[in-house]
Length: 76
Image 1 (cartoon, rainbow, N blue to C red):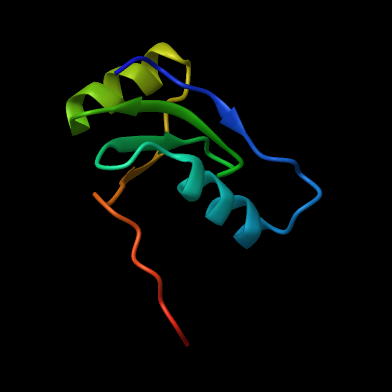
Image 2: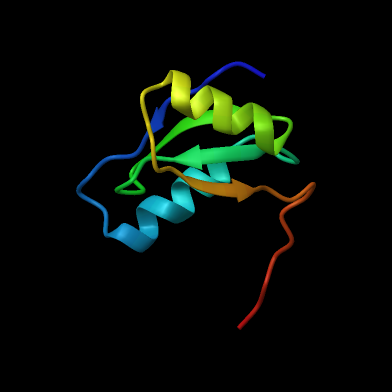
C-alpha cells in the first residue's frame, strides 16, 4: 500500500478528529497518525510497511494503529 495523507478539519475536538480518521482509514491495515494525531501520514498492510512509509513521509514518532477487518456498531 502506498503512503497516504488524510487530514481532518482542526475545528472539531480531538476525539472527533481521531474518530473521523479511523473511520476514513482502510480496513484491515496499519495506519500511522501524525504526532498530534490530526492526520493519517501513512498506511501499510504490515507493521514494517507502515513504519517505513511513515519514515519516508518524515514522521519520526507516529501513533501506529491496526484497523479492524470490519467496524462493529456499539450501543451504549
